[in-house]
Length: 345
Ligand code: FPP
Ligand code: MG
Image (tube, rainbow, N blue to C red; front, side):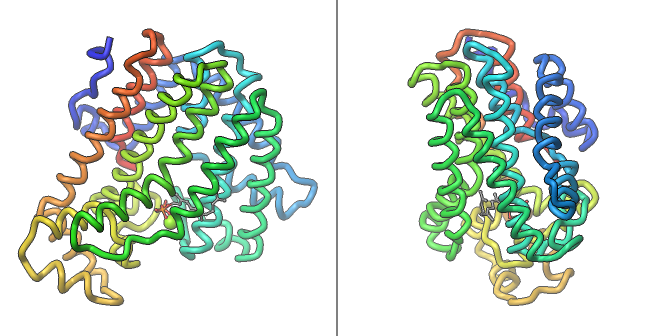
């Protein structure tokens, strides 16, 4: 059965661009008969965002309507479908993970003072810092409410652990570029904590809502974790290869802010040229210097090597699905893994 789940060749959908990618994911959700249930999650999120306080309602609705691919909710739903599926048993776990994600992004944009996300003005920029702080907290409280409505108390534990881990990851910067093994250890720890932990929790929560066994919950959690690792590596690659139009935020942000990510670490490992070193030592680089550094990282093979790492995590993720019997939901989880490494935004 594993052969059916092998990653498709990289680049298979590249030519179609962002729109193609989004419609491919939408088509996948339609094929997996997931669209109706994702719409139900969306409706629930909007209903919960409707606070009696106008300011909170406006800022929460603005954030929910900024959307995103709802990958984490889809993971929870698909995981539940590997077991005994009932939408009402999993919908709260699917909504909870999107609310945690919304909370973390509103706070992240506040911390980073980012002007835009997904092409839309951020909450702190549209309103102010206090509103962003409170709206993030509000989403967080909504998430707790959804968890409490879930049928299996372990779901609360999975998400509570994930949130704790996300915060720990967020406050664990990559501080060095060399020696490479130490830089990689810092990068992988941070990435696992700040991104992969929540993917893992969504999968475990979904599997628990579907009545899965402990072994199935562990396996799906590993799938989610490795998928999350690949997702964040691609996110970090896109900061080097994307443009503002496709990303919905300026490219080159990480270099500009001195954030060390995988393409840079792997480029430094591969190049003896002092040019890249000199460029990244500049405290406040100009746009031209950021562009130069981006070119140097690609020329040194940093982007290609990071891409190979993302592919490795995807193969690993798909490997964790090997013991589940074939089903449309299992097939969709494998295909979703491939989309994650092919996305362009
Ligand atoms: C985006 O990463 C941000 C995160 C993955 C998590 C941010 C978490 C916090 C601010 C802590 C609060 C957490 C919770 C759960 C309430 P990024 O900055 O690499 O990506 P970006 O370019 O999309 O901003
Ligand atoms: Mg950020």
